[in-house]
Length: 115
Length: 118
Picture 1 (cartoon, rainbow over the protein chains, first blue to last red):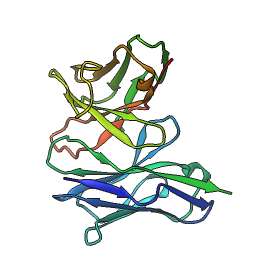
Picture 2 (cartoon, helix red, strand yellow):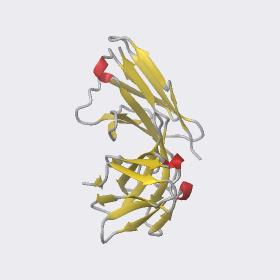
Picture 3 (cartoon, chains in turn orange, brown):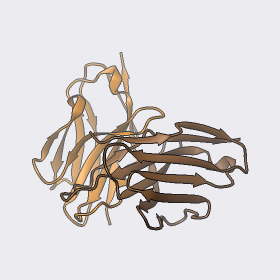
Picture 4 (cartoon, each protein chain N blue to C red):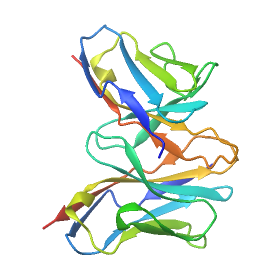
C-alpha cells in the first residue's frame, strides 16, 4: 500500500526567503509523485510531477522538487518566496500501473508568506 | 492544458433537498473521473471513481444511495447529493484522467463546488 506523509502542517516564511515543504512517501513499486497547490476555495493546480525520469523536477512558478529514493522523499523547494505563494500544498503519490488509478494525498502543508 | 470545469462553484440548499454538481472535461475525453470531498483544513478524501458508461466504484464508508454519481458521456460526470443534511456541507472536487495511449496518470482537477446545507 502506498502512503504519503507531509511532515509540516504549517510553514511560515518571509517574502524573498527560501521555501522548503517536506514530503515522504512509501510505495510498493516505482511511484509517480506530484505536488499540487490549492488556493482558498479553489481546485488543485499541478505544480510538478515525477514519473521516473530526471530526479530533479522543475515545475511552475519557480518551484522544484527532488526525488530521493534512498530517503523516500520528494521535498518541494523554491529559492525565494512570493506573497502569491501563500496557499495549501499537497504531496501526492500514485503507484504507476499503466492505467488511471487512485491517488493518495498527503494531509497538506499550509504555506504562509509574511512581509 | 487540459481543463476541468465544475458547476456550480457554490450552492446553498435547504435540508432535505437534492443538489447536483457537474464536472466536465472541456478539451479532452475522460473515461475516468474521480470525486473527492474536502473538509475544512483537511486533505482530499476520495469518494468514488466514475467510469463512463458503467456504475461508479465507491470508497468504503461512502453511501452510494446518498451520493449518486453518473458518468453518461466521456466529458461529463455528475454528483447528486440526495436529501442533503447540514453534515453534507463540504467542498466537493472532481478530477479527470486524460484518455491516451501513454497514460501518465496525471489528473486534472476542477475548481471545486462548495455546498452549504442549511
